[in-house]
Image 1 (cartoon, helix red, strand yellow):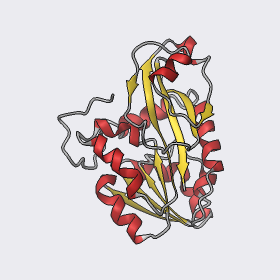
Image 2 (cartoon, rainbow, N blue to C red):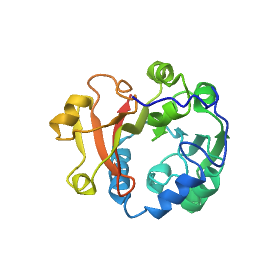
Image 3 (tube, rainbow, N blue to C red):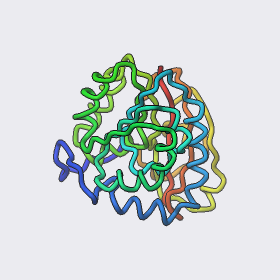
Image 4 (cartoon, rainbow, N blue to C red):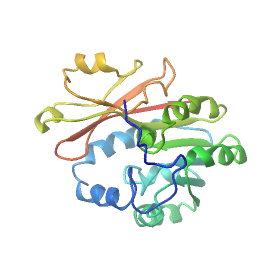
Length: 240
């Protein structure tokens, strides 16, 4: 399981340098832009198939939208972002600002912890869609109570269509092994046994997201080579 960081405050505060993002992450995303292309392509395809019937979407942890396509964002007329990275709005505007202005999308940033702000935001926007942008698998690095927060999340989103792509497992593995891996879909959650069936033995970090999606929901498992050695399985799925 993901090991909680005992030095983190119970309610994280926005900052430019963070354990799970900030300026270091933006530098890495730019440095490994070409390496991340297969992952972005899979996320684009997943989001293209998610069709919530609403003009409002709340994006949780979008960072600079490095993995989000402008064509997806432009489908909505109102975008609300909840983010702990103070640098994210600037980089997001540089990446997507022109497309969103052309589509006349309104945007609003809330710099804060989604566990504090999300409930109020979605209550004020009945029927809005919610997209968690590769953030839920990092919650264990932010909060000691991440397990209870993740367990309560599906019920708190009742009445709202939502989707998420998030870290499921990660490891340091040989690059030659990464190149043999490809995305796949299943209605069964990826667990230690499934990893073994894929021939992926060794020491894997479980990011604690195995119960986020209810039984029967189709899960897309996307391989993500973050660096030359660091590898993540990202789980993607939608509800409602």
